[in-house]
Image 1: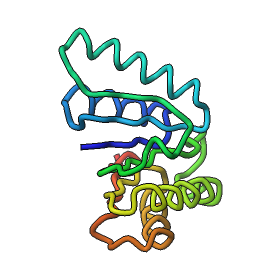
Image 2: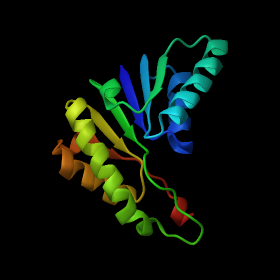
Image 3: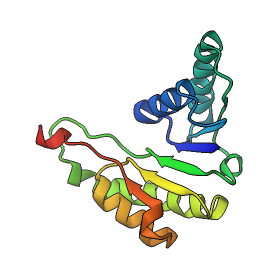
Length: 149
């Protein structure tokens, strides 16, 4: 299975690490607008996995073509909340990022399942579904109860 993770910040990097560690995918692509960051995280994960005998291939890149034919795409790209911000404050800034990600995801992997993690996750999931026109069963919002705890 091919997994692409869009955004190599803290959440994206951890998702890539956990997926590699658990053998979730035979091929993992970590994509970011900053290719060097994605490549560095991919190398760190590769080195850690060698010690555990994991054979997943992982690559870091800024080239959407590397994500082509992904089975699952996890969208973590976007700005993080700053102190005092509410998740809804992220709506306008993250909507533009996620819209562009959704367009490229649909272009390169039209049969994929999309997992949206970018906040505010409910709004971003709906945006992704509207932009891609994927069936709602293939666009999954992944959130927690952080704001309610």
